[in-house]
Amino acid sequence: MKFIKPKEILDENHWLAGLRSPKQHAWAGYAFEQVCLAHLQQIKKGLGIDGIQSTASSWVGTGVQGGSQIDLVLDRSDRIINLFEMKFSVDTFTIDKKYADVLKQKIIVFRDQTKTRKATFLTMFTTFGLTKNTYALSLVQNHLTMDILFEP
Image (cartoon, rainbow, N blue to C red; front, side, top):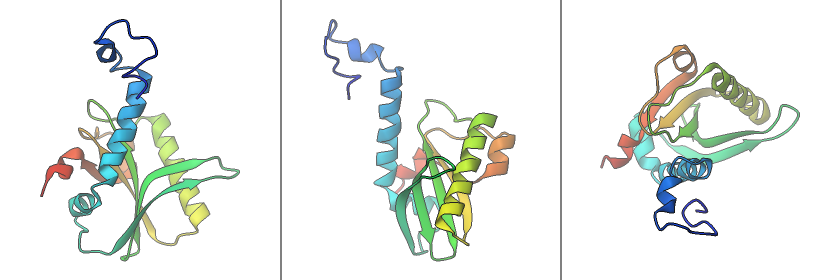
């Protein structure tokens, strides 16, 4: 919340000028994740798995391969694990080569450190959609947008 109330306020609308700042972007990403995590039933319904028993958690890996963090892990009773990347963006989100490599590494580290034999599906949860490009089409099994959070 530092971007809203800086130490020295010169203008009462100063916080508006900072809406595109790195601090605000970090806050928006964190807030988006928290809203998503508060709506697990809508997420499961959006995936079409609301009738499948599952456990939800986040996951952080460590070790020689480097740290890796997954926003949401849905471990399902049908032997599938959805690994969620939640991304706040003011437009459609695009996976480029660099970010695709990061995502691949997260999946490798998760599978290696958890020793899971279940299928792992990368699931992107974005504000306004995902650009359909080679990287998204080859990596992402499921994609949800914030619209599902507002469905009954």
